[in-house]
Amino acid sequence: NEYKSYLRLNVGQNMSLFDPVPPVEVKKSELCVRPALVTKLKDKAKVKPSEYFEVTCMSTDERLINTKEMNIPKIIQLLDITAFSNIKEAQLDIDEPLFQPFPSKLHFQRYIPCQCYEVPLSLRNNDKVARAVRVSQVPSPYFEIITPPNASSKVAPGIDITFIIRFMPTEQKDYYHEIIVATEREKFLVPVQCMGARAVLDFPDLVDFGVQAVKHESTKTLLVRNVGSKDAKFSFSTESPFAVEPTHGSIGVGCSLQVHLTFCSKYTGSQLQDLIVHYDTGEDVYVQLSGNAVDANVRLEKSTLKLSPTYITMSTQQEIKLLNRSNIVAHFHWKRYSTAIEENNNKNMKIYSLENDQEDEMREFLNLCVTDPAKRHELSLITRSYKNKKSAIEDDDMVFTDDIISLEPISGEIWPNSSKTITVMFKPNVAKNFYRMVYCDIVGRESRLPLKI
Image (cartoon, rainbow, N blue to C red; front, side, top):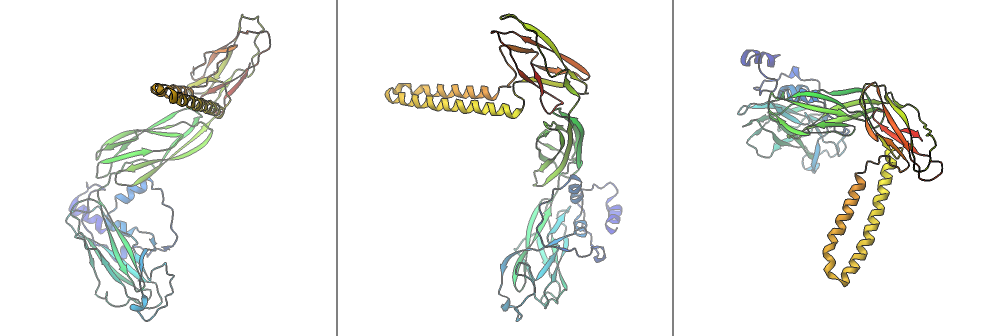
């Protein structure tokens, strides 16, 4: 309340949430109850946009008041306890220091250059006997440790001793420092993190694409604004079946940018991924993306087609319809294989065979070069030839091709609530019965639609 009153009387109602603020003294009654000690290391939590916004708009004092956890500090050196005390035994394990610091990490933020900011560092004696503690630092022009009058005395069990860490910034940038705490048994570090101006993009915590047809690309456009106090330099990343455009860029303070998110799942079911916003200051913010892919009402008129008999070198044809009873545009291709896995396996077999042929030809060519060195310049021609063949295999769409039975069109699109007529032509070259299985890979259906001819 004192902080808000100061802003109303001295700064004004129009002050930004991210503007630097002058130091305000925090009363002890405003501090929360000492948080419980977290002994186990937690996995790094994914920070949501709303959480990042809340943390960055806090002042130094608000950040201290809202500290809810404290951790065991990192011990950097073990000392000889007999040099400082006659009592060698301690009730604490060797990996837990005799004094527990609070807060475990000191934060300064939204500060004004050339003003002094202070944060208390409390050290509680967790042992069962009185212990001594000393606090020091590597000399720095920006940080000062103010010791209490009783700093030279031993601290009784369960009692806190409070040091004041004073910060004097010269500009609104990031600073990092470490406070060295020496007990009778060990030394440990208390990090000091000073966060300068930050860019904040106002993404929502969740972007839900709802229910969409499988293999259909759905797009959402977000108007994202930089509500922070610094120009935003960022990059975006996500994983399939989601995509983002642009993948990187910059936004000035108060400016906006359109971000296009797309969802296109090859499989039915719910899909969850994160859009990761990488800021140039090192922070990552996670926007949850969700979507549910289902089969649409897209089907073949019938799954079996029997063509009329005809003579050799003559032809007969028949029509079949692809029906689209959904509200999406359904793109289709007639394929040779029932699944994409079979297609990839076939491509891999062809590439493997091609590489064996290349090795055999290269071996013969090198033997030839031993007798005729003038042919060495032809090596690049052989390499380029096989490289082009491999590219042709990789780029092959694997659409249905056959000398006896053909379909027209082999690919196309069907508008919502309409149909497409497919013409199947039979032109035999020998007198026998022919059977073919053709598969329609179409948007709106996870599995390819089989057609037996």
